[in-house]
Image 1 (cartoon, rainbow, N blue to C red):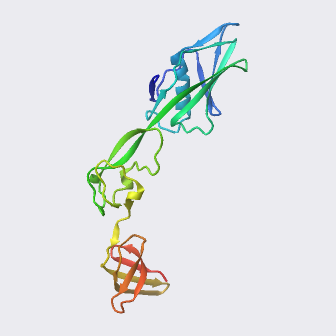
Image 2 (tube, rainbow, N blue to C red; image 1 turned 180 degrees about the vertical axis):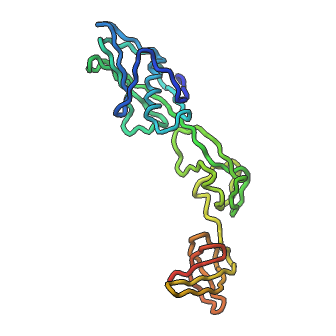
Image 3 (cartoon, rainbow, N blue to C red; image 1 turned 90 degrees about the horizontal axis):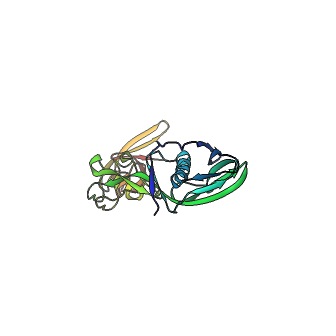
Length: 249
């Protein structure tokens, strides 16, 4: 590989180069003596691309690193008044393997076009298990930790904030340092199978309460089967609180 750089958000501007950002590309202009050639060294070429990435990427500065996959020997452009423009691919998302082109113009006429392959990684937070977690565990702050990892794609279902999982219940057993995904979590049970529950029937001016026994477990909002303790009839009710269900009718 040919070098990498972490974008920190602080970079010296190239001497004699004024950078502008417009229409998804980065432009610059250099004046030269008539008939002379302008040389852009390898570091200058890298800085052109890095500045474009930093100006257009959706990521926070300091959380991105860029690796150049091509050897950069420098570029020489002949002309009287050289402009250049850095362009990205259409619908560029600034992560993973991609490429950028630097187009040089002399008085508005294309004088050179050079493409460079890069690999972009982004630092993202992931919530992982801090210990072995058994099925049915209701997560607390002590059960999870946040780790930062470099990724070249954003995983689906990534959870980066512990507040999004604390209070949720684990489905299945989870080993330590396992990245938590939404499919591993469910709302905690407010009613367990066999619990005696308070059954509320309410509609307009009508309000009734009775006692029933749940025949299945349920979380907040679940519709579960309840058995009437007097008639043994089975009906459905919605879990609204711990050991409390509501009959919709």
